[in-house]
Length: 73
Image (cartoon, rainbow, N blue to C red; front, top):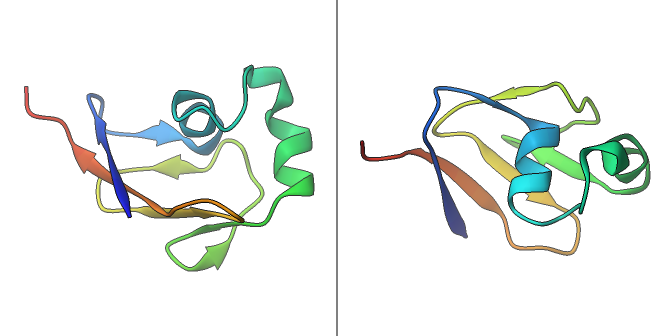
């Protein structure tokens, strides 16, 4: 499981997918979410605007799980 540091308190699922390189542009988020199984904290999720915070675990089908952590400032 890899860790992704957050500089802000929250990030949306769509922003995270772009940040970690799962999708090249934000415009592809909707179709990616429709075609790919994604879980947030063990529950299926398909909303690109889902707010994520440190401690959340995101699992994308076929990829290593990601844990969000607070970035050291």
